[in-house]
Length: 447
Image 1 (cartoon, one colour):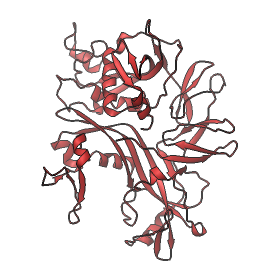
Image 2 (cartoon, one colour; image 1 turned 60 degrees about the vertical axis):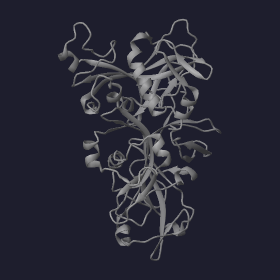
Image 3 (spheres, helix red, strand yellow; image 1 turned 30 degrees about the vertical axis):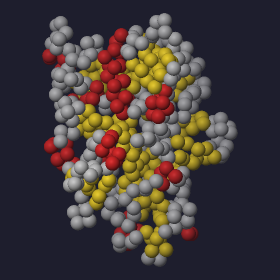
Image 4 (spheres, one colour; image 1 turned 180 degrees about the horizontal axis):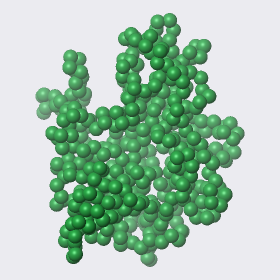
């Protein structure tokens, strides 16, 4: 499954020129006046489709939740991973609207919701966490099964079924959220997800409800009076644009379009947006002797405290029962050093790279001196990298399904750029023995 991103239309606040952005872009770079702005959302992105048909400005907007990201399941037999990319109606009580947006997010351009736009908005009934919990119920199938599955809906029971092929004559019922985690032992973990609220335009003409994008009449199931009563003002969650000026020295900062971190080449500092302002990011660089550095990949080095016994996976930073002087009491409360990539790649490769970095991260000395070499964009925040702690701590000798995020506390995190050497079309880290293909990095930029 290849990730698909939607496109955004925006107007430069400095010169008014049109600017096109990708869904994952966090730095706006105007190609005309060279204005650079950092795009920050307090919780999630809010976008809307500009209506193609708007009689007398009577359009109103219906919310849909969009969720795209990597999903992991810690089961009794191991860890399974996959990608989720879905849109769902945020007001399920009004069944006249479509359940999803379909391919519109991939074929039509959107805009940022702003307080000055015309129209009324329908407030969402479902919160972001309702959508996340509902996505946890989806089944985990092998790649072979995914290629030949087909979905069948039962009109009487309204249950979802999966048919896996000719060898399965009976459909397999998907267990609901209540027993899916209990009976199957599945604990879903979402990493690097992009959650956004997308508003689709509709309008009323007499007693008929129309789609303002296609002009088609929407099937009306009643309840239009209640719908009109609930129409309100603009959403409170909107994007804020911060100038890309270093708070420390006042120079212009740099950064790739999808980078969460802006860098200042003058005072050599990294900055990220938090609570509507820029906050300095602690940054270090790993040193590799006698190796030519072609690319510096960012990793999150996290100091984590666990409330349960940590298994033997990392003799350098994680307490191990086989280590001399091991004290279980200290292992329960002492810090555990975990590493995780601060960039997005394919889910299965992400976990393997995180486990390799956690095992061998202590083998490379770190310094605050900025070396020569290209720095790869930081596309994953520390909070999302911390979500992988239960998966990284899985070992072959430990029972599966025993780690949950509630058992870990993130004490401290910093950013470490690790040198990789290019060999052919792959980037290699000699000390860690880790290799990343350039196509994986390119593929991850679209997640």
